[in-house]
Length: 348
Image (cartoon, rainbow, N blue to C red):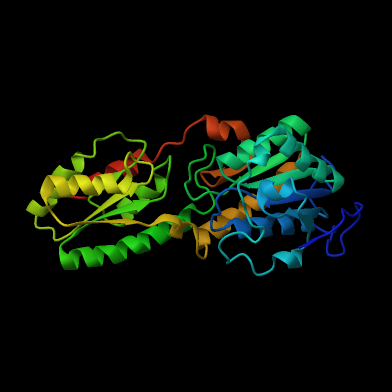
C-alpha cells in the first residue's frame, strides 16, 4: 500500500469485475478497511479477505494505516490483491493499529470523515473490539458513512458472535505455556498460578482450564472468594497430587497475585505466579482463526454491497449473522457455563 493523493474513482488495474460478481444494490464502488485497538492473530487474514472479495466484485479498497489515529491524519492508500499476498499466516496487522484520544472527539471524527469523502469511500470496514466499534458507530451516526464491523479481539467478549478473530490462537498460546509450567510444577511439587488475558471476560481462562487440566479457575463473571482456592489446594495435596495449576483471568479481583498470596498464606506451600500477558496476542494464527477471519472479511464486503450499515458480521452455529454495533457492547456475553462446571468436575 502506498499513500497518495486521492485518485478519481476509476477501475483499478488489478480489479476484475467479471464473472461471478454478486448483486450490488447499494452501488458500492470503493470501500476502506482499518484495524483498531489491540491486535489479534487473524486480522491479516481478514484484511486479505476484504481486499480480495472486493476485487472479485469490481470494488476498490483503500487501506487505512494505524486505525482511527491514522484515519484522522489522512494515512490512506489503495490496496490491491497483490498487496495482501502472503499475509494470511502472519500475526499482528500489516495495516498497523493504534489507540486514539483524538478520535474520541467530534473534531477528530470529522477529520476522518473528511478524508473518507475525499477518497470517495462508500463504506468502511472496521476490524477490532468494542472500543473500535464505539468509534465506528459514532462516525456513522455523525457523518452518515456506512460502517461494518468485524470482531477482532482475543477476549471473545463481543455479543452477537460465537467466536472472535484471535481467540482460538490466544487459547492455544496460553495452553502451550500451561503445559510447560505443569511439567515444572510436578517436578518441583509446586503450585503454579497462571494469569491469562481477559480484562472483563473469562472465556480464555475457562477454555485453558479445561484443556490444561487445572485444579481451579477464577473469572470476572463469577464472584467466588479467593479463599476458595485454599481448600481446593489442600484437597489436591491430600489426594497425593504433586503440583497444581490454577488459572486466573486478569480481570478477576486482584488477579493472579491475589490468588497466589492466598494460597501461600493459607497453606504455606511454595507457589509461583506467572502472568502470560501480551504473548497471547502474538504469533501465527491457527487454522480456525484464519478460516473465521476469511469468512467474516467476505461477509463484511457483501454486507456493504447489500446496503447494510452499523452492523457487526459474526457467526452463530456456523452461520453468518448481523448484529447492530451498539448491541455488541450493550448486551453481555457470558462464558460457557457448562464448560465452567466441567472444569471443576474434572479437577478431582
